Amino acid sequence: MPSFTQVMSFSGIAELTVCADELSGLEFRSVSMMVFVTICEISFQLQGALTGSVFSDLRLGASGSVGDLGLNTTIVLDPSAASLINWQTGAAMAVADVDLGAILLVEPTPATSNLLITVDGGNDCATFGCRVRLGVCPTELWEISIDANWGEALCGRPARTAVSFSCAGGFESFDIFVGDIELIEASMMGIEGYLDFAVSFAPDSKTASPTLRLETDWTVCSELGLFGEIVWNSYPFRIEGLSVFGLQLDVGFAESLGLVVAESFVEGKNAAVTGKADYFETIGVYGPLPSCCGRPGAFEIMSYFRRSPAVPSALFGWGLLEASGELWLSDTLSVAVDVRYAAVSPLWEIVARAQVQW
Image 1 (cartoon, helix red, strand yellow):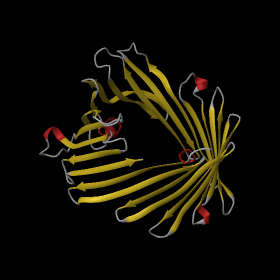
Image 2 (cartoon, helix red, strand yellow):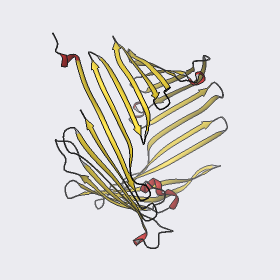
Image 3 (cartoon, rainbow, N blue to C red):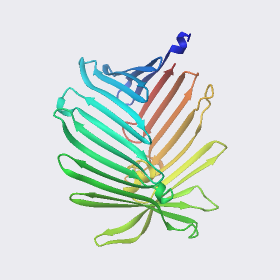
Image 4 (cartoon, rainbow, N blue to C red):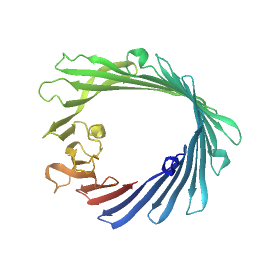
């Protein structure tokens, strides 16, 4: 006869977040909790969140299986208004090499409730997926989308197609993507160039998006990456040249530490290079932190610089410092801190999180 612990298991996650900044001082941001209970082969989930002083979210869910048929259901409530947000229930099963699924979403407004039917499968040449969404009240076809991945048929090169239709507008779009097209061989100054090409067709437009990826194979600074793009004319269509608009160096040192340096040469390309549109240059370090019980700990410090107009009092155009760290204090307790310090107001912000697992 199985023991109680074999029949039933109990686990959960609780997280507390507090914030302090220059304008508001110290304030409570949120607390959330997820509790999982498994009885035999049926799993139950309770999830709640308190944001500020508002009990913003309560979710009740259950999942299990009947033979090969997987079933799940979730109800989402708004405790502050004592009202239903939505109820979702689904079923899934595999037939041969095809995965079938259905998800019913019921909302207080009948016109927004819908049923999503999914079919996914594939063979040695391609994988495909089909999505059909139906309105429930009244029953009507909303949209159909079909996508395919042809990577296996093209020797592992990424290639995808997707087409979508809607009841209201008919044909919506047809998208094609082909990647890893070699344009520049490595023998050319140790630089390899690859083209990722995407085309999107709509009833009243056609959009082509060629993207150039440059990779280096240099003995010195082999970790240096280049950001580039193709300069082209849409009508008549022709490629006019190649442009390099940024670089990034990510190199390891002192065993497990890393140094990141990135610089954008074009103001409009800052976000693609440094991750932030307002800053053209970033310098940072990252690495592990001592942590308990074999759990991973890590930190990252990134400094960002403006090109113009920079803050007059900031050295070398410095504009922003971001630092983050996370570590485990025990097998069940972890803490994380995010710090932001800027050259302009609001000058600073600190967000701290503590998470308990059991």
